[in-house]
Amino acid sequence: KVAAVEKFLAGTSKTDIVLEFGISARSLFDKWVAIYRKDGPSGLAPKPKGRKPSVAGKESLEEKVYRLEMENALLKKFQALMAKDEAAQPQKRKQSRH
Image 1 (cartoon, rainbow, N blue to C red):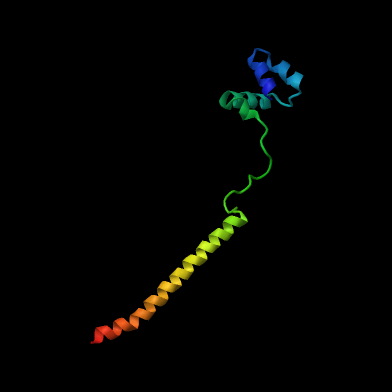
Image 2: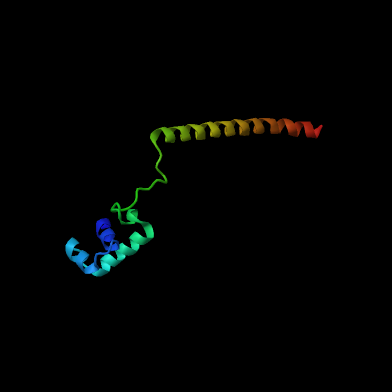
């Protein structure tokens, strides 16, 4: 693709290029030229087929273990604070009645 477009930009006619490179349609070649002019040679580079691999939601096992350990530690601290608060509430009620 790049060679065909660069040869065209150098002055060779579209008809000669389409025949030389065996391009199936002149309109296809026109698209290549437009892409080349917009994005340069990298615009005509082959693109991977299929869906892009999803990055979101992919975490390594080590990351998952670390996240779960932190979550577990946080829940343990929360439980300890709640137990401490519940233990302190009856004492507060007794003190407020005096």
